[in-house]
Length: 178
Image (tube, rainbow, N blue to C red; front, side, top):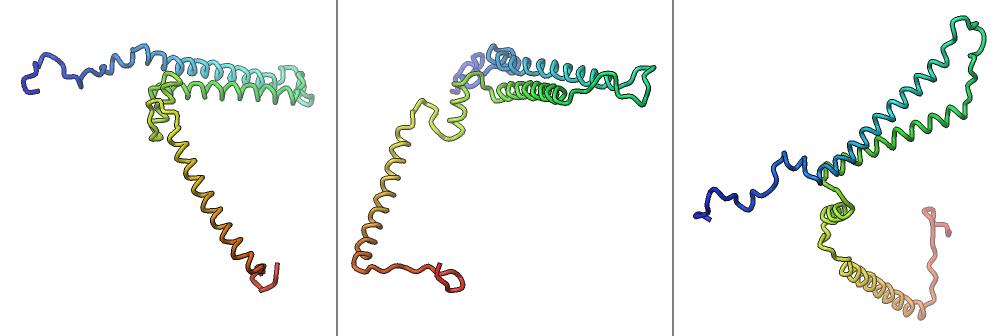
């Protein structure tokens, strides 16, 4: 190591610089989901704003409209509720798309395989492609040992219960039978 040429970079310095990491195809793919969500969220906010402005403008009476009369355009409650539900759903879906894209970009996930590998690594499970057979066998052994102990206890109870057929009485806190 001491006689290594200083002009050659060491193997540990082969990571891409931050400027190239943001412009890599992988990062652009991840960031495109966030940007699509952000543009979708902006459009939904504009649509909501326009809808609210139209509803407000419809409630203002015309210049020569008498003040003791109802508005000239009747208000349909169920239709208004449906429009509000539609706008709220649009806003929530666009925000969730933006948030999901941002989280995928922040956690460096660009495919389902990346997500699986990161989740398995975070749980302490080997991300090397094991299918969990070892864990299943260990669980089967545990369940078998528990059932064997249970059967042993039941056999001992039957031996004791067969000799003496004594029924236990259950009492409450006052000493009365239940």
